[in-house]
Length: 208
Image (cartoon, rainbow, N blue to C red; front, side):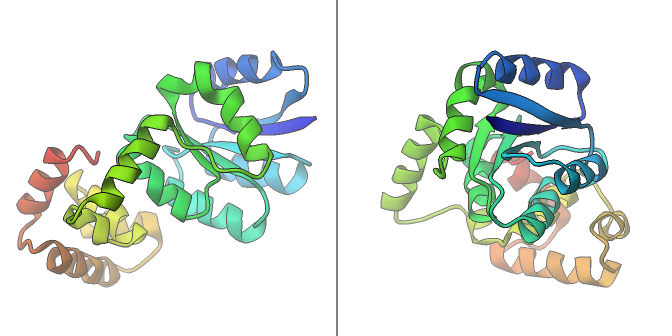
């Protein structure tokens, strides 16, 4: 039996995912969590097979949740479920340790297939993302944000959302000075000098 923990802050979404999963005779939802705290608690006390993780949670960033889960349970497959563009976020989460990345709009058709592939030890990405990755491999240049680390990319998006350095530091549990250092690195790597430049870039490339 494939036992899945569903992590999403929307009850309607959790209900829909549960119905899709439990329509399969060899699958069941072992638990549901609406935030990162509940997720960590469930995983620690539940004999689950994999985690279906929404990356937009009210109490913690998706990258941080993934990193902690992989630290505590390195062999636990984690399938990311997201509304964010897969071509911008999918590869980053796979590199960070996720076993797959699935867009919510594709969940009804692809969810069971993705769960089976991840449960078997494979990696799941959509055909469209696979095609884009191949295109990137043959391209001579790549966009500047691809040179950022996951943490730098995360802070870039938060700055573009109008967040202050202090609020970013509070959420990431680092000092305002540390966030400022990250901002300087981002500016240098992307050859930009102002927050307005960053906001324009992020908007143009639909990163948020």
